Image 1 (cartoon, rainbow over the protein chains, first blue to last red):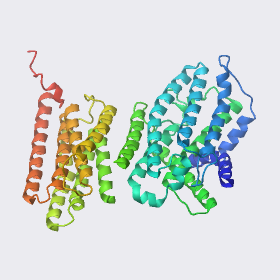
Image 2: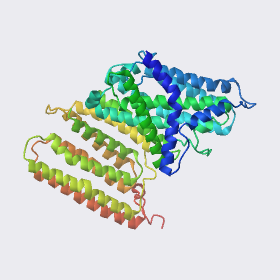
Image 3: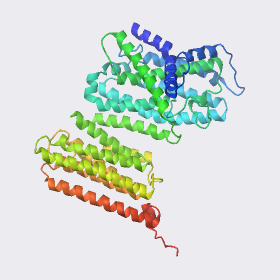
Image 4: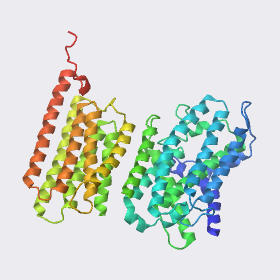
Length: 302
Length: 217
């Protein structure tokens, strides 16, 4: 209980830090010094002190969306088991709740982008919907496979039962799901093989284009929500890859954070050594993620 | 289930799916080479007793021919024909993947109904063999370039090889070697044929071969 609260607090505090780690890794690869590790905190502070500019064409959807995005992420954090302890709102079926609260936030993201009436944002919204529809298959099939392995239908049940002895028994299945989750993780967080968070080239943007019209505290909320989303999906991947259960809650949680740091560094490495895929090739990547999940499920069930 | 056997099965499935889903011929050739390396280890998983030299000979022959000689021949004919990728297959790549997954399920269903000597892992290997054969047939039917069809033929042969190694417990060494030699000759001749087709018609699209070159004269 205390531990669950503690890890939520930690997610709220440290989630923006991971983006700093990614940027430092990329800078290191490019031979630059790079931004300060705490750059995103400065950005959030700066944006929080600014005023908001709204377009004349928007309705209430656009005004509500930033709060809704952040609220959705907070709700998901209550469901998220970290370091193998039980989450605050754990219950049977919460794996679907997690997937679809994220989907709900995405839905509002899309209609808020359409609400601005900008054609660029409509383009981004269409891409976001197309790619996330494909990523959802891989994500849900992977979660269902994990539920079949552990025989539990709650995320906390699944992640407390994962361990290295389970890896010995079902290593191939877990590895396939981890690959699928990593691809979904990169796609959902708009990282490089799918989307480049640094460019503002309107032909290729997906996530960045959808928040072009937001400003001030709204933009800060959206950036913060995307940092939390990174933390949430990353925790699901790390909990699968490094299921370390020592019996001391605090140490387990610390290992989970260490795993997230490793994940941030590996995302930085992927972004440094890979180019963004052509837009037409992205669905192929996501379909292959679904194939990995599907193969894992069938391999388990037979 | 044996850890190595399950790793073998998963890698075979993934390489088959990669063959179905990739457009670049270089990737396809590397996948076939990878299957050749995997298949070289198969005799050791399946036959735990019996003469070791026989297994070693089969493994070595498979590794050299399927893992190195065939890919080299295919790469060479790819460079000679100057074809890098399959441009417009009859069935697209995502759809081929989908068909592949459905066919994999079908192969399980069929393999579970075969009357087999009861040994653990046998059903899985049989379904894997059927799926590999399916992938080979599918490549032959759904792709246009002659080179991809040769790759499909090789994959088909890989499936037959899995069945042969798994089910025929005391198949003589001579038969195994004879099959390998036949496949070698086949790939060799196909390479020469492709070279001639390419020189005569300036392409290796099999669907355009049915119209003669001097049709309109």
